Amino acid sequence: MEKEKIYEILTKEIDLNYVKKDEEMKKHTSFKIGGKADILVNVKSKADLIYALKVANKYDVPLTIIGNGTNLLVKDNGIRGIVLKIDLDNIQIEKQENSAIIKLEAGVKNGVLAQKLLKEEIAGFEFASGIPGTIGGAVYMNAGAYGGEMKDIVKDVTYMAKDLSIHTITNKECEFDYRHSIFSNKDVIITDVTIELPYGKAEEIKQKMDENMQSRKEKQPIQMPSAGSTFKRGADFITAKLIDECGLKGYKVGGAEVSTMHAGFVVNTGEATAQDVINLTEHIKKEVLEKCSKEIELEIKIIGE
Image (cartoon, rainbow, N blue to C red; front, side):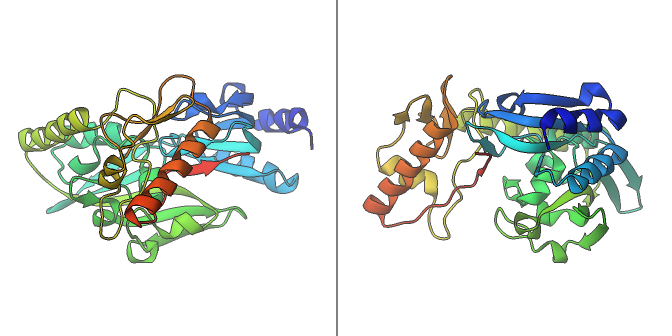
């Protein structure tokens, strides 16, 4: 069905401000790269999510789910069908005697949550305070930093299947592994996450958050558009170190560059295309395999066409 017709159907129930036609995906990724999505819906409520899914199902429209776009590379020809950007951002804190139970909608941004927990003197989320993106995305890839991972704090996760059925699974059922969860292989939508955290002292929590942020500023090119760490760590090697040893820091393909600050990051120097990034990552993989005999794997997710 034509996108104009789908747009018309979607906007019967969803606020016009939240439905965009021919939307540049570079506006929705931290890489600042990507072609146009036929239709992008900023999902602000569960009702909007259900309606958009019903429309996609009824008219057999391809569906793509994104969070804050911080671990994504969208290809230059964009994305066909409907892109649902999950913007559900409710936070509920239940204080118990020895710990706090925090119920989160999947679109809650990690940085926003970290600041709220600091005010409430709830500890244990400091590791994630500087991780860009949303709680849903963090669960999806079991995000981690500074010795912590999502698997350490998640109690359960609720997701919606494309047939609108809702399921809640436990931490163990999430099958968390390094930068991986059951959701990495499941075509579903994370809607809610429950985490459990201990109490702490505000000054100690803030100190940890500040130290982590300072470390990021000193070691990572956070001032440049990127999708964070481009490659996964190896089982027995640090990928960034191998890339550095191959002399690839500063190596460029078009507008994409291996960061001169941290070899594990590919950055957009201004006008990079998705193809520039793909070509550069393929070159990096080839060089590391030839010179170090190690196969390296992307951490970023590539979508679109």
